[in-house]
Image (cartoon, rainbow, N blue to C red; front, side, top):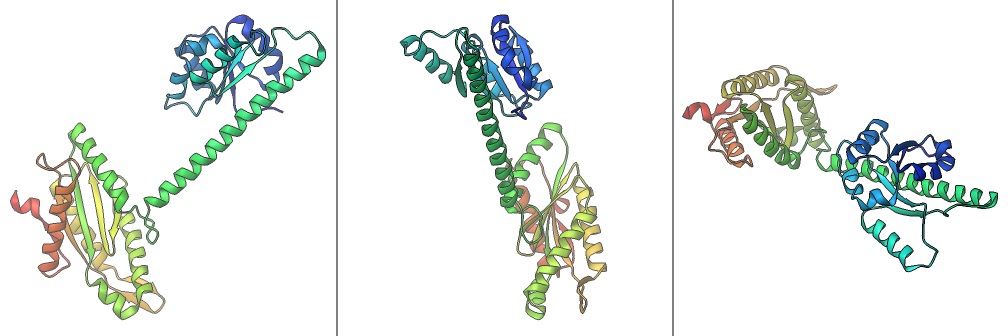
Length: 323
């Protein structure tokens, strides 16, 4: 049974010759007495997930670099001893312990030279069984990684609007501040809040309120640029990260969003259409801000508070006020 995972076999010429009859049906790639760089290059180009190594290469600490390359898929390493000492010998046990300790996922010991057809067939089955174990491991690992990615996406997504949530914002804001500082690019932030949202819930029910938030999320996605990121911060409050955007540009985007939302009523259902307005606070990162984004967010949030206090349906840019 052929494994789905590409296989690379690395060792000296006698080692490769010993394994070739068993691995030829799998189309395994041979790498004779390789340097570490050459082996890494072969694994990458073949997109190999299983590597069978001679003990000498394991002892030269080849395994850890193979497993620590971000551009490689998960690598399952089988150390293959083709010249073992007699079984139940302390040296044999010590060899196996050493190879497993140095990072091998499995240890396969072959006979020095099988003399009969039956032994050859049995050894062929043994090699096949080891490769099947490796394949099962890789399938389980990939399944766990896919499940982990799915769970991570759930943890960082708002279930109602499918926007990224507050936790995602906290992570992304720090990352974007670091990138903006390193590249010398501006970074701005908007905090948006739906005006009189409680009235929507009180007069039309929470289902109508939920639908308004869903429609608003769709519009924000459509109205913003592809480089911008929008988050549901909580309740009827949203945050927008504006990459490569200075304070003047952020203020213009905020005014455009406010006008587009307010001038186009929301068709909540067949019988209900509502006009929604936004209050928005604007802030732009400056050298005095902390790297976690707390002070940046606080200024935008304070601008939102002033917009609410001054009558709503407006943009307040505290950075512009202070120059």
